[in-house]
Length: 110
Figure (cartoon, rainbow, N blue to C red):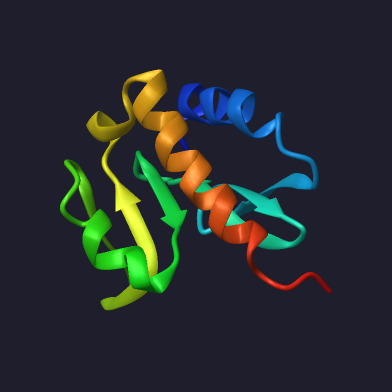
């Protein structure tokens, strides 16, 4: 299944404000990277996958529609899956995308 093109377009409008952002297909979705580090992904099965600081992970799980991302049955600390309904408004989507961008900016550049 392809990623949600409408959601990707909405994310694209937000990330264009950030220098150093590139797009790349991965994980069956469309990812936005900041200086080579994944910040946010429009998932192949809907919603987002957002990279967050590990210390913030648990607190973000309390938000509506947020869950720990799992890959191959393994939970990934520092990655939040955001359900489609939790990023339906521009404000909610912007909040999640900026969280991913903000964390990616803290990672070392090559």
